[in-house]
Length: 77
Image 1 (tube, one colour):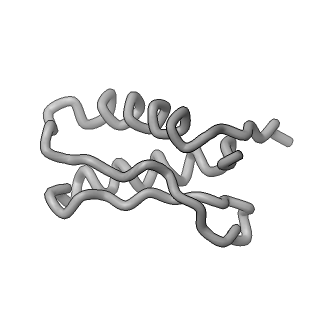
Image 2 (cartoon, helix red, strand yellow):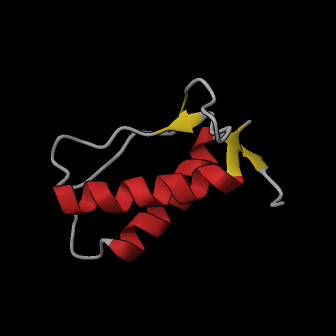
C-alpha cells in the first residue's frame, strides 16, 4: 500500500499546478482553485479543485486525471 502524505492546500496546489502545466503546455487560460475540503469518498480522497470556466474540455480532462492520481497519494492535512 502506498504511503499517503498530508499536505496543506498551498503545497498540494503547487504539485498540481506543476503537473498540469507539464501536460497542458500550450494552455495559459486554464486555472483552478486551491484544493478544498470535501467529504471523503470511497477512495478516501478528502479534497478536490474547481476548474475555471475558461478551461477547455481537453484541459478539464487533464485536470481530472491529475486530481484522481494525486488523490491516491495526498490528503489535505
